[in-house]
Picture 1 (cartoon, rainbow, N blue to C red):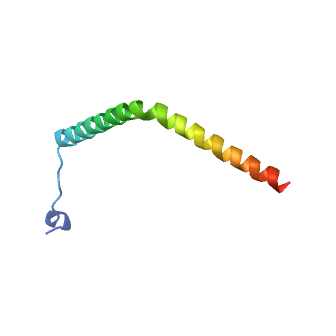
Picture 2: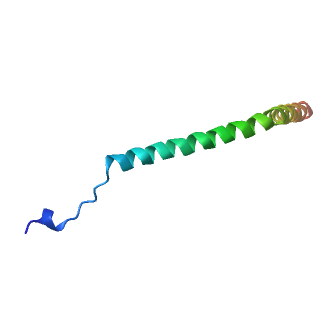
Length: 69
């Protein structure tokens, strides 16, 4: 007997691969859509908060620099 005869090869059908890829892409698109909707509801307060924190940090560093001089 040959070594090849002893090995069992797993055969995956093309239909199974394609349906798996389609399902994965569909789930990814749904998750991305949900994430975009959630982000659209909170993006404005989030941007305002980020701008406030950046300005606060810049002001604090300028104050520390002026106190150091």
